[in-house]
Image (cartoon, rainbow, N blue to C red; front, top):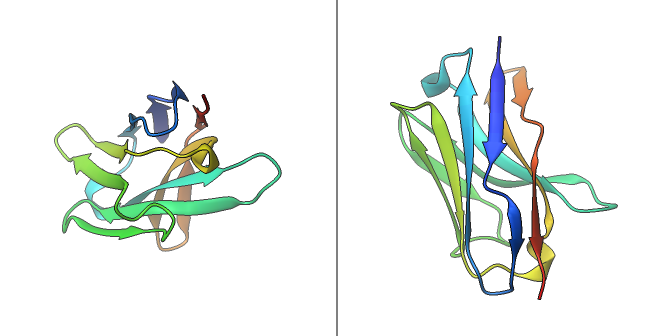
Length: 116
């Protein structure tokens, strides 16, 4: 059974940092493209960052470049999102995603709130 379990969300002040984790199981983690997406209230779900675990190649939304870093621990089948210099507009539910061709798996999401 495929599972993606996110953790690490919470309330943080503007300028602060958080690290999200996504523990994956039930599929061949290394051959999928792993990613983080986010959905703010009243908005569509948008791409934040992706990574190919084997190559380590990454892709970021322009809005997070230079502030967020996606990485994996392939031995633990876990993908991380280090978020620095957080802004109120980063407030959203963050979802972990695994994709391979037409296959898509989603986690249930973790809420990140950036507010003073």
